[in-house]
Image (cartoon, rainbow, N blue to C red; front, side, top):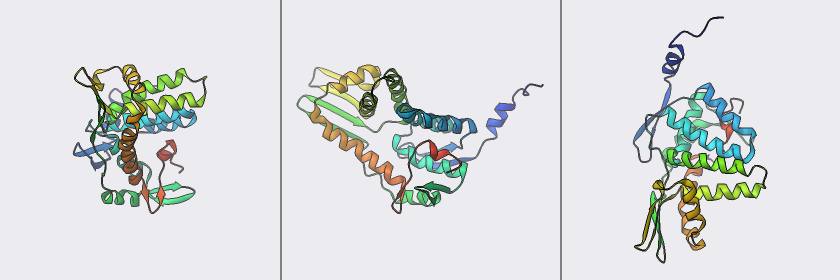
Length: 245
């Protein structure tokens, strides 16, 4: 039995040159190559692993977009439009939602009607505590999700509520850019270990949560709008890239 010729796989990857073009929210025009079968397999494999699988799905999607893209500063709010276009390129126009077959091109055409009516940065002040917020990049989110997966795995024998609690905290920290306390302390979150970021967030006063949740809920609302057309919303889960749906 013969071996693969030298350079064959590299040539195969190079010839996978079909791609989508998307105008990102902050990083200009971006070109993203279509998925490979291995990438599809990696996505579908997360469907059977419960809560951990949901987190791994989110991380895998981020990593695939970054690997296939010519830009590396894409935001989490760029993810859904890119995935819609990649789904269409890789698997065609038809997608099934609630047992109804829909045309994904309708969702893509509708993207230009949706305005990004959320703040890219914000500041929360509570006494001497100042939180500076930002929309995270896919790269930043993936780094946090990697740690989150490790922590969820440690709680594998615990209750589901334990895992949800971990995910909740890690969801919050990705939106925090900096925490200041008066003139004494100024912490840039990117300079901190993720475990230390968790400790900071866990000790924030609950009174900051209303404004913090408003910030990320506005982003989530935009993402949901990009996945909605005529009252039908596409769910981003492993089945999104299942050829049978």
